[in-house]
Image (cartoon, rainbow, N blue to C red; front, side):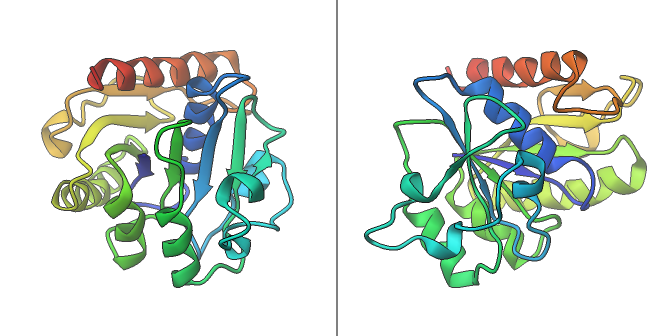
Length: 208
């Protein structure tokens, strides 16, 4: 499982999660993007689906793949919203997510608190998302340290709204960076879509 994490809310984690999910998915092997942010559950809005059913509705007889809905804002992606989910419901959902049959992307809460730690414990790798500002990068460094401590090492930094002039590698100790330009509709822009594919290619390379 891949965690999309960062230090500040509003830096573009959810959009990156959906864009990467689209780049990793195919018509026959759709990605599953899961909202794990109980305080700001906005994946369903970005994906263009209803907020329910979602994580709170997962049971023994209703597994994640049967509850998930097809995103309308991106292709080849199913989403699990987090509306009205308790901590226990998030833990249950993460524990029952499919591990092998499709790419799974966790849209994490911002920061380095207990809620952000929950999905990172289950993830295999982390993509750090930040704005190209000192404050955002400093906060993201705390998230990076937590991801390493929880055995979900950061493999890539994504700077959103970046012209490529900022190098976060020394602060975040992350091997590679992808700069996503500022565009008005990031899930519809060809420029942004090319960056999502670049992210997916870096992930594939670092998984070999």
